[in-house]
Amino acid sequence: MVHSYRHRHGLAAGDPAFAGIEAALARQPVIAVPTINLHGAADGVTPAPAADGHARRFAGPYERRLLPRIGHAVPQEAPAAFIAAMRELLARSAA
Image (tube, rainbow, N blue to C red; front, side, top):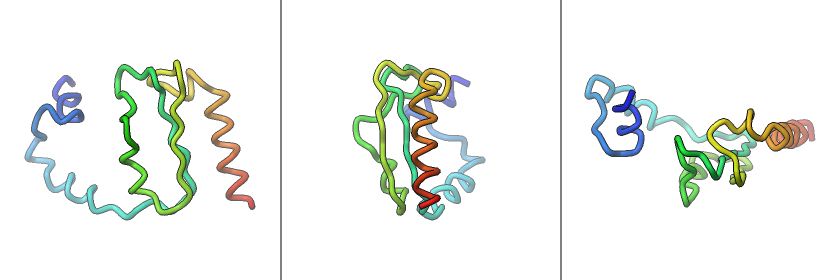
């Protein structure tokens, strides 16, 4: 488990047995559906990056929201913000 976090944060090499899977995942197409990316600003597990490197993976409408005083479990810690984002996405898809 510790190795998983070290690898995720670039502090340890990945398992060579999974190199093929990693390469296949890197070739995935960009995402074309409307997306709202919610980040907890107080996430101590996977802190929100200072810059939004994920935006390049999206071709459709994309928005990043950084939620103050929210940690790792956004739907549980900020249910109103989570539901609001879901409603916005549903309204966009219905229009």
